[in-house]
Image 1: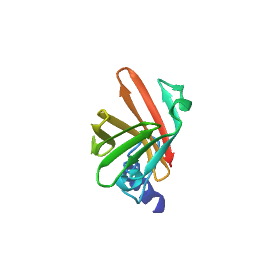
Image 2 (image 1 turned 180 degrees about the vertical axis):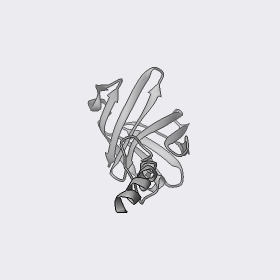
Image 3 (image 1 turned 90 degrees about the vertical axis):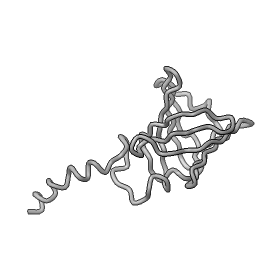
Image 4 (image 1 turned 120 degrees about the horizontal axis):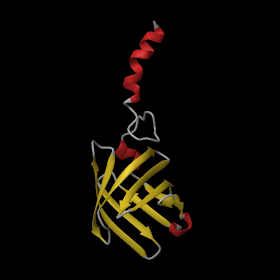
Length: 130
């Protein structure tokens, strides 16, 4: 009986996973998990590791829907909203920031993985709390 119940619930639990790399399930909302300051742990452009380029780069997301980045003397701000059935983040620049759709691969309290397309270039960031 337990195995039958587990088999019936498996499709339900599989649909809980919103992102390809996890988490499987979370008790915190997406907004709560993303709302903090992040730093780069890994950066790839078209599959090539270029992490060293982004030393000192941080991004901050707030529960109120604002976004900012800082990279040495460069900085910018914008707004964020959830897109594509709340699986991706749409950034809209307001100060020295363009508009991008971040395709989230993983969103945990201590990990944010995403990529965005910049023309033909795929830029993938793996972030950790700052």
